[in-house]
Amino acid sequence: MAIFKISEISNGLYDIIIWTFQYNAFIFKYLYLPQQTAITTHLTQDLSFTLYTSSAQLPEEWNSIAAKNIFLSGNYLSILEKAAPQNMQCHFIGLFKDSKLCGIALAQYINLQRINTFVEEKKNFSLKDYIFKKFSSHIIVIGNNTLTGQNAYLLNEDLSETEALQLFSQALKALEKQYRKQCIYINLFAIKDFNATELPDSKAAGYKGYYQFCTQPNMIFDIREEWNTIDDYLADLNTKYRTQYNRARKKAESIEKRKLSLNEIKLHQERIYILYMTVALNASFNTFHLPKNHFEVFKEQLQDNFLFYGYFLNGNLVGFSTVIKNGCDIDTYFLGYDDSVQKEKMLYLNMLYDMVGYAIKKQFNHVIFARSAMEIKSSVGARSEEVYGIIKHTNPLLNFFMARLFPYFDPKIEWKARNPFK
Image (cartoon, rainbow, N blue to C red; front, side, top):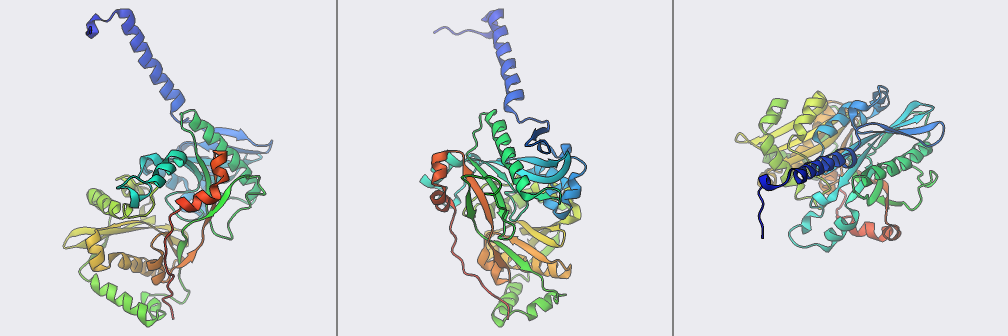
């Protein structure tokens, strides 16, 4: 077999090789990479939508509509660009009526091939995981996959929800077309999360073949008007749960809780990530993992609206919790802990009590505890609120069986609601 050195290759062949590399680079840059310009599409003469690929492209009026929800503000959306999970890409949708911005929305592309979805089965071959990744890996969702609740869109009074849904339907198709140009074929479309009163009439807007689903509930803690201090809350607990509170607090007497600054978050970044992954890898279902710089970027961008609390034992960081102020509510965000310390010191339960205490002291209306760990959250007084969404598979045959397939893949968690109040 003849072996050639580069120097022995003819100049003509060498030029062809160089040209081929340059051509492939051109194709990758201009065809397979996502488009970086805003694209406007008209549904009717007076209704249109614009897809933005960067928060820097958002119109000035965006934040006036987003004032009701920090999770749709330009500031927050810029965070998603800097610190989104690696398997997630965000798109921002502006809805226009008579050339006026009347609605805003967040859409996310999620690639589940890049993550262990069904965590409990990751050590062995899982038929469920294989089928799911084979046929449902590429998802476009209108909504925020890192949060629970209606953080999908906001509209002003000039645009009806039916009109908005019609625009979203076309926006999903436009995004699907963009990804097809990158040789990425979308499997699922979804719009989420709505409570029973927020759930839009998708059928009236022409959504055919979509399956309405209901997943794990959102856990919401309501702050009573008569509560001014944590003692007022404790006075309303029955004896059993007041004893639980005192026991948890006694267990954690050696734990030091401290609000961390941006520099301290940077200093503990590696440890924070380890603690976060300890919790994430114990979840029954994962669709993303946060990058290491996630909390650093959040604190840098949101400043006092993002609170990061570290829990220390003998000077070592053994846990953390985060909350985001959103108007009259606070949303609990991600947390992490050392598993052995959590069991011994009842760390997670103490974090929940700390969040409740802070919300009462600062006179918020609700603590949005989100989904997961429903039973322990209900033991501190959170109520469950069912959340709904709609979903459609792009394969007509698979979509026909969606009513059976979705419950099969949706993890079922048995839990018992608690009522700690008198």
